[in-house]
Image 1: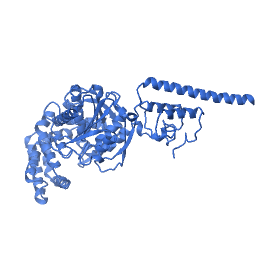
Image 2: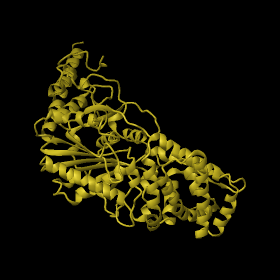
Image 3: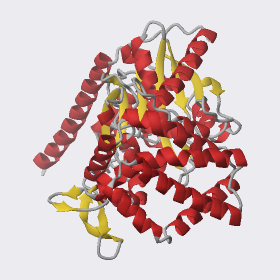
Image 4: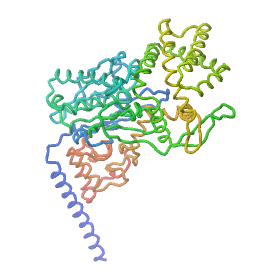
Length: 557
């Protein structure tokens, strides 16, 4: 009996000694790894919420974001999944107007400690505008400059996007980048910034501009008072627009290959992104492949195809049959003019515009002369007469509906739209002809490119919706992963309080990163309202049974 009691005492003493030894080792490792003074503020992980407007009216409710100054300690050449998600949160609120910043981008920037917020062209859009938000925060002797480019609600800027130019960078994106560059240079001059880090975020159109601006930063490091390691560009679902085939490691292009926008403009036109791709999304997803049934003149389903395979095939087919030269010479002006007219309308007028053209094409499809026109196209699709006949018929029905229901726009704009019909038809008739005689695999599949694209629009464009992109990113970010219910002292969320939890607290207080978000209440085991090294020591003492505290290891009430 005495031997058993003695053995029990020795075992308890051994456990205490072992725990104290491990604690000493951990403290030494922290001191060696981080011989700098503790900066509690910069080590803080800030949790906040934001809301976004969506394309389809879906309300995802309040979404969480997590921010830390530590994001800007590593080189910008390294992909940080936490900074990536945080960048999406910022750019998805960088939209619309600067009149409500406290509900959108201003709310986030101020909450995470950025000041001197400046906005440009956020209250309106024009063919030559670019919505820009600038702010800064002093971190470890350098100014982190946030450059948030308008994430959506582009309006007339969308019309400008259709101006590609015959060569070089896509003109629309290059012109917008020049505006951004001028704003940033003026900003660093105004605040006399001598050492800067750049946090640049863009989405869709502004993602393309962010790419080009990131390229400008890398080309003129001294002029922007920065280094290559101090540039953090995160562009989401961006169109490509650079004629230079150079990829900078500090420009991160987050791409869902199921999103058609990321293929604009075509790579076959020798256009590129300026950064490295960072892929998200399920590439095994499929859509329904469609073709024309020659028996009943309706589309038919002919199988399933991977979304990414179809988009690649479709874009290559488009770029092969419509060159950049053809697009620049014949299409970009008329289509941008129509877009400019459309985006100049208010919501009620836009609805009338859409309804008008729906009626035009509805009546056009009922005209038996379309069959004769179709035969003419098949016989000679490249003939100017074929294009003239189709143009004349479309304009006839435009005038017919306008006479019956009224014009959807002013007389001048109506004349502009009618003038745009001819060049658009002349380009797309040969394209439609090539698609009619296209084959999928070894079988003929008339119009399968056009019909599959139009028949799967919702599936093809949903991956460009901001909330879907955010969901994809959070699935890859450990801060958003479900953890065990809040247990006092269980920092890593594994359900147990162990030496590892004390080590995580030590890392946090030494301003070192940990791979997840932790609520303060979980770490404050001694209950003094702060998270310090004393909390790590408290856990170590509890494990060594030097102290007894029945709160530790139990859910926080």
